[in-house]
Amino acid sequence: MKHRLAPNCPRCDSNEDVKKITYGQPASETTLEMSQDGYVLGGCCIRPDSPEWYCDNCQESFGSWRESWGEALTDQIQ
Ligand SMILES: [Zn+2]
Image (tube, rainbow, N blue to C red; front, side, top):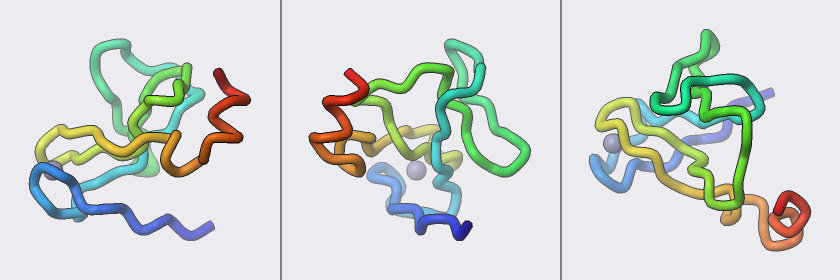
């Protein structure tokens, strides 16, 4: 599976260190942890307003699942 091209970070305007945040796995409540495959673990629960991307350069998380999934799927997970 090819990785989706990461968007530019709104803070530093670069996507070189932008990682996709993955949910459904245990992670610390207060810190984002990097998994071995380069993904960021965002916690065990996903919400409609959970960020989709994380910039390792400036620790900014941005984007939302609502934007990429659309309204229909958002309704299913609420
Ligand atoms: Zn950044």
